[in-house]
Structure formats: structure tokens, C-alpha cells
Image (cartoon, rainbow, N blue to C red):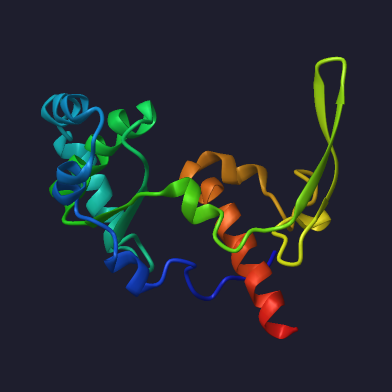
Length: 174
């Protein structure tokens, strides 16, 4: 497995995120749902204690980055819970929007599709800065994907960011 020495989210990028209150002030949809879910969420003292113990460990979490859009039900249900957790533990939480747009920065090229009897299959792809790498297109190779990663959604979601960082490193070497 490739050992990542630095986070793909730099301190500068983290600081560009909004606080939870700033995010609430900037959203256009589901404001009431965010507020209701926030008001209805409490973090149990034993959970606070466990989170703080985890934070106190070497390399334990010190910050929380939430990526989401106001239209997404997972976000208006989950982000208020994260905000309460951050408040209760002292974690600094920042929110980044534009998830889809951010993931497409630097992506270009063409994809060939095969349409047949209601199916749509990828027949090929080509890009000078492709994030696709056949070595990463498997869940079988232990050095690419570990089944244990499924235990932590955040780690699994970060896989695309790690692959992007590796692709960017390859481009810099050329």
C-alpha cells in the first residue's frame, strides 16, 4: 500500500472551508431540516468522553472536514450531528461545498459508451490527466483496497482523493 505522508487536504484548503454557522447562512435549500436535526441532536457524555480519548491519542483527530451540499438528505441529516460532536469535543469543523465540481477539477477527455438493449457499458476512456488507473480498478488487490476500509466511511470516501493525489504526483514527474 502506498504510504501517504501528507493529507490531500492542505491546511490552506481546510481553512477555506466554512464554519457550520457560515454554511447554514449560505445554503438555499433545506434550512429548516438542518435546524430541526441540529436542535434534535445531543451527544451523550459517554460518547464525548470516547471521542476526546480518541483525540488525545498520538495522531488522533484534531479537525473535522465535512463535504456536502444542501440538497443531499445524508448531509442535512448527518452534518448537524457532526456539528454537535465538534462542539462537544472541541474539534474544529469546516465545511466544503461544491463536492461534484471540486472532484472534476482537472478531469478531461472522452469516454466511449456501448448502448445495447437498455444497458450502458463503458467501452473505453481516454484522458491526458486521467484519474482512472487499471491498477486501482479492483477490490481484490490488497494494496489498493482493504476490506477493513469499509468500517470507516470517511477513509473509504477519501480513496478517490488519494488516487487523485497519486495521479497528480505522476503528472508532476513527467
